[in-house]
Image (cartoon, rainbow, N blue to C red; front, side):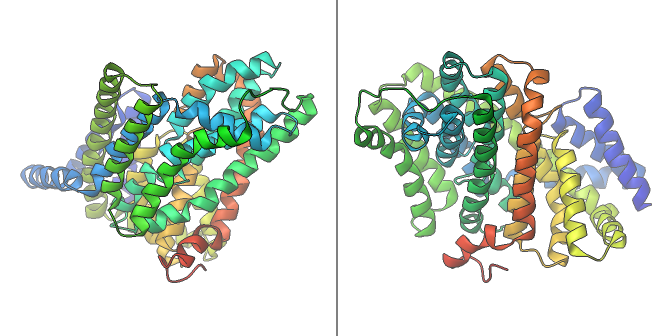
Length: 437
């Protein structure tokens, strides 16, 4: 019965994806088909489904998502990216292939402020691509570095996906997740940067020859207000001054004031940003509502427990189990966007992770890191499409550079998976988790 329900649920879901049905509709329809195939009375299912949809989105914490999204959009259009790039160039300008290293570092800075890998890839790619072309960089190489370093933005806080995971997992501490994302995000960025510099040196790309008209102190000073957003948000959350949702509001107001001071945003463009944020937030909320129905159907049919038993029957070695989980999530990340993947796989794999002694925080970082890898791979890699679109290159051309960078990212993922201290030591020293092992 459970096997049949599993096949019907995921089989019908992926069949609808291949047919071009929107993900949110596919999740809801697959859940309905599975529910009726298991004999749940239609009237009971309709009542429970409606209740689950409402309760799934009836959360104060969920308000953090549109606010952080709006803050990231304002930063993308508000002149902040240019200042971060200039500051990044100061630190890596003497390195061969410095523009590639600048791209990685700027994506990490921007991700730390915006919390969006798509926004980072769009902002940094649009500014750096012309500069790299002028200095003779292969556009495919430049695009690959931008694409593969952008996912650091969903690990280095503030991060919308980590907030989504916190809600889906039943209230895991957002502060602990945020602090736990710092080292994994830095590790992923470092892995991409090292390989990118190696490739750039092999191709003969030189160090910076740009003569800045401003002093280093002034360039850093211009970027400090943008970086101060991270201090305000994280300081407020850790200090108990405001919740993650309230932090999103503070971030929006701060970014708006900063963009007005920089004279990079108008009221008409701000209206467009609000409209884009509303559309994106509505899509996410509908996904959450549909996923709440799927969670009910999976719970009713016992699918998570069956998958857990099947996985544990393969091996009792937790290292093997974690490897299988990572490979499965990495493959699924190629076909599912981040939001539905978090909503679908958290209730399935979190109990397994707990059963082998992995903390909720470490699993959350591992899951989001996996989805970051999925963002850079076809056929549904949102960052991949945005990065290629901005750089005006084809997916086929950029793939030969993405493959080695993807391997470097996967190595970083394995380190986070098997060394708990990487994701837990910062929250531990902040008093947010009881142990870092």
